[in-house]
Length: 443
Image 1 (cartoon, rainbow, N blue to C red):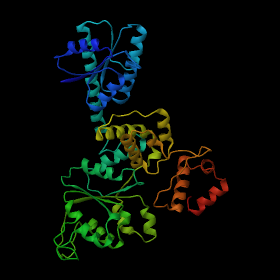
Image 2: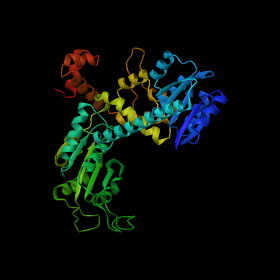
Image 3: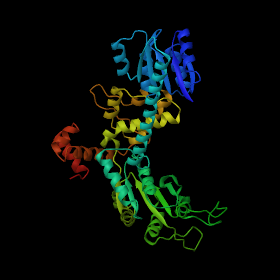
Image 4: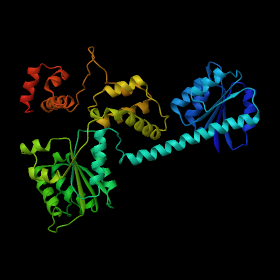
């Protein structure tokens, strides 16, 4: 059945329209005002709307504007007793699928509704086709058309069918796990994708968690435990935050990568699981290895194929597409209408530096959908009186030296290595800028 909403403030006219369409494969619901129609739209699915132009305090055009903003797929026909060309043009420019002048014949009404229904079906089909196309162009939920993301997609596709170990670098929230999942989904591996956060495992249990353990091998081992490496047999093991792996376990991981064998805790029997290893970190493993915090030989064993996930601030052109994806995703998840975002709000989002990257953007959109408050998108994005961005420090604190070094490197990169321009970019004196470069050993 087709869900048809009739909006007409004249009860007699409304009854006539209901009689005409009754029994013609339509499930009809009616309202006498724009406000009542909006409540109906929020409470049940509607395929087509047939609305009068004049509806008390508000008009059919007001309802049409609301529908096109929040339910763009719905077919919409509008009728008026003032059948002027100006009205027809205004209705079509506002997004109506058809326009009908009163008085109208039964057949004209049915044809108008049928035309709007076909428009609804075409929009739904286009949405489905676009979603299918997006799925083809985006890997495992990774979204982006920026040149930096194109390079990521190309590398993922190139190495996905190999068993090469991949080291994914990137700031928190850039989508490192999504990239690892894409590698698995594009591969021919039939096993599971097993993800483990190396920083979330107590050091005392880390070996058993990775390599497995026999019953009684340690306090609390009441039964044999299968390790994550063995669980990923014929699949992919993703070790997130590899820089947090204790040094005592790094040697055992290196042995597995070199020889392909593991020995569970409390056992003397070697196992040889077929596992593809992908690791990720937001830390500088080279610097960690120089400071003795990470094994240099393990780093080179992991860094067979390096992959860098760019921060969101370096691919701002993807923000509108990400916004569209997240509003659609969370609107469907919470059964809410998909809103549009005003241009002034979009500009603020494009100008923001996004320290939390895509994850932060996703969280903001989710709150926006849940609370139906556009301010949730821009809270905390404000500027100071002189127009400079306000930075909100993370509650966990910040490594100032690393942050300053990153700012200097980013300024040089954005200014093609020109130190004079980079100094102006950071609003630093040239000598002060050179001093900081020397301090951090930046050539």
